[in-house]
Image 1 (cartoon, rainbow, N blue to C red):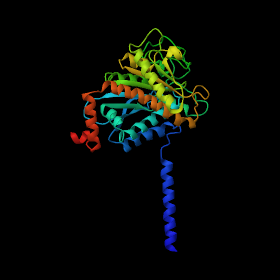
Image 2 (image 1 turned 90 degrees about the vertical axis):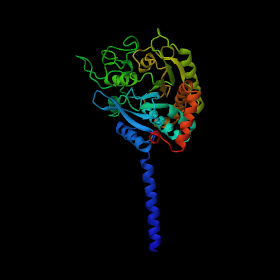
Image 3 (image 1 turned 180 degrees about the vertical axis):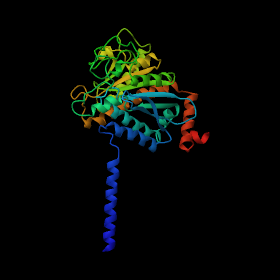
Length: 358
């Protein structure tokens, strides 16, 4: 009898323990406030210390640290890179959700997928889950702040409003089109180019490594669009045809997942003209493949996309992003370089790392 009771207790404790583990499992299909995203970043390093590190590269106006996840295999060599940022506009919650999903997917893939192993050998992924941290935190405050877009810096002298539109603040045809100089407007571009600390952080970090970056992806919502440079109709990217071809391939990849159509083109052609975007700035720095993803939906819910759409949105967007990244990789790495990557993947499979080779 005592044995039976003891056995039942053990079974009960096991069930409770399993349930506890399940409860603390990170939920990629819900929206997370900033403290949970920060904890998730720390946990990613703990779970994948061989390929993930956290880099701090700036501060917001309210003195919060801007951090990214650097993901890649340490080969001991200088590497090419992929940039992805999410949450430059505070209210676009699906964007940080996608960055987190993207990180999970590439980390799960690299251990078993030879292609991802090769890409992580040749390239590092720099992923900023939330760029506009102050604004994002403000958008979580209550229902009155949910649709906050800008950062939280105070307006210029004699202005009682807060915030600059960070995606109008980059030094790319700044202040010319699709902006406002009225400090209370949502598209207020700031008092000068790169006046905002968040824009300064990206400009400094990416600008100092611009020759390394093959691809610059900035994630937004909504509209189901893939936007390529430039936002100003008087300027055309020198590789416009390539950008359109790769973009259409990404849209095809997106459509193949859940049947959603994404429109590909420059912002003036498919949305509206604008200036001062990070995408245009990145292309002006010589980064060849620069895109803005405008995720779901088409306006039914707008910025307040229901949580039950997080999973399908992330699944399709991942397919599109991976198409662009794979193209960038394969265009750059071929022949002897690809052979070297294959060799490194074999060494990785045998448990040899950059540390052990040193």
